[in-house]
Length: 401
Ligand code: CTP
Image 1 (cartoon, helix red, strand yellow):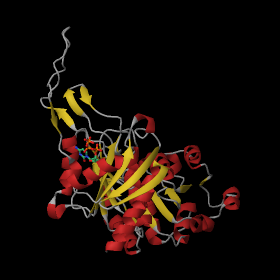
Image 2: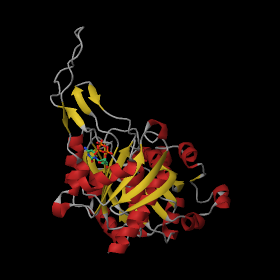
Image 3: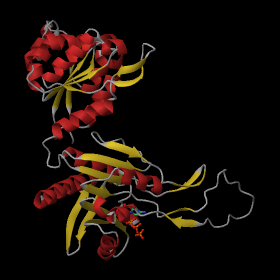
Image 4: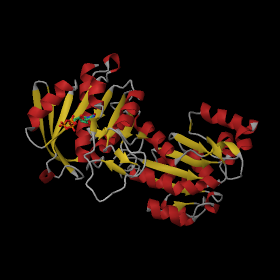
């Protein structure tokens, strides 16, 4: 659970309101309990029923509705939240917030709140650039309101420019950062690799492995939940992007290495990817055709070792470097060899023989191998392994700082 908090989402009347069901879905997925205030304008673009289905709660719309006031009044709505997000924030709501108006449920709740507020402006580029909006923006910033976006791009009105609401992922990322600012790893940067890599044979075929990316993605999530700024370099997986994490999608081992090196320096690196050890030396530029004969063996060459490269990157070496050792026999001995040849600080050794069910499964049994110590962890879910690892990392960085 990344955001175990209550968020009040105020949806105002801009076309970008169509993105709010996705925003609610992502916030909820990250663990937040979301309540929605929908303005009259907002309800022109997204239905209360959609938002009610996603929040499994009433969508609050009317300041004077007895039903709404009975279940939760405007003061209670803002008091009950840990964070208020206004998305999309129109020029109108920004003006009303700046002026301290309270003429509907949204503005009243916003005036009544003493909780932190994030706004995601969305409007036509000329409205955004208008001196009135600039002044309102300055006023809101001076009141410690966090502004996210707007982004540049094509707009619904057919124009191009600044004014698009930031993507739901970015708004969620800001909320996660906000809550984890006091986390034990806040101010630290981490790189996590995850998933398999795909090494092309020809334009339609590739070499890969069974890695699902579950463990690596869970580690990225757990580090972010502790306030760490995480870059997740991920091979092709079906995992959804963890909230609050910067994801760099890659396909091959060489792309993964380049993305990791580009993300240095880092305080922490966790290499959880099942990188393909080999690639085809000479990838065919056209689809290979069968011709009734057997195919000559493919010539393979070794891929770069990402963990080893990071371990030997001199002054750029991450402060705490963690590798995995996927083994089917002599687990601890093989992990020790990897620890020293790849120059890492910890190796998390795990049994990946087919009867252990690690690849693609929900559980992992880890042995944390250091130069002169082995810690045996019980069989845990991959999420629990990730949380234990993030706490262990936080303990170690606190001890050494
Ligand atoms: N690793 C890597 N780059 C590679 C190969 C492995 O970064 N080209 C990392 C993995 O992410 C893991 C560790 O090295 O953290 C060990 O990976 P593993 O597959 O267990 O071992 P290999 O080094 O590939 O050795 P072998 O397959 O011979 O056991």
